[in-house]
Image (tube, rainbow over all chains, first blue to last red; front, side):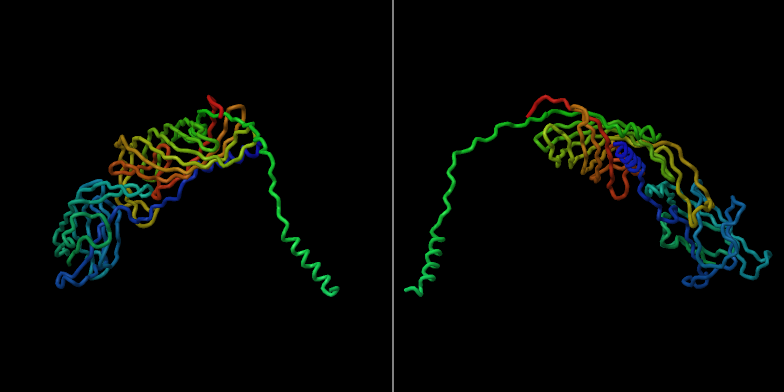
Length: 161
Length: 241
């Protein structure tokens, strides 16, 4: 009799504390801004940015340091309505004297959107608009007039330089 | 003549066999035994004691359930359970509380052949469950984790602690129950039962999702779940059949 009570108490404990495995499989949950770089002279050809470093205006640590690429994904600040990034590139040599800095501003309205039990909420960005000062960035075009950022399936904006 | 003597014997034996017929027994009708064994029928009422026990161990849960059943025939019972539950669900990024009432209606079929004067059961049953509740999203943190886990996001997000409540949510589900019931003292029954629940419909809270329904337990993507009951019931006999 005692053994059955112990066994049944054990079963009760197991069943009430059982939790189903639920993992968040999306990564990232909140979409980043995807930028692709193209040649200003020939707008269909992607052009690498050399020795690109990116830092946000309000931060002291670099987001990206000294890479050469033609597409990047950068996060937007979900607690504000705009994010300002300083994009530094150097297409001469590694000397800091030849760095060229451009300021890139993204304005938007952040909104919370529920995903699932394990992923929680994500932030999507509505009414997006871009602007830059004209140093090495010659032109910006949002891809096919995107106004919301809610996924990272394709690039959101093209920068011509 | 003497040559065919043995063959003639064989023929007669054969014929003899054929001609025999079984006579039917025409006995007088035996009298049927008229002793009928009566067992108590009535209404059983009790409580589920697994819920207060769970509330003791789990600080985020509280609940109470009353069970009842009524015997319809030798092996069929109509059953009802009603109760109240409140649970706070703490997930990685959200914290919410659901509280409300529920009722389960159904029937049980006893598959156990009882000996004389014993009232034990091994039953299978079905229930239709219905709950009305409210859910409050207490707080959440937007998930801005990107790339590798455990790396601090470049722009961390803040926890939002403005509670959002939605009342009048409801859920409907079906349950398949299997259980064991034993009569311990006279008219006092102890039951263990487990159930497999299938969610039929649920209202989701606006801009959120219903994660817990009283009576159903946690709601996952698949819409199914398990439940467990341990009840004590007392039979109020008001008829004997």
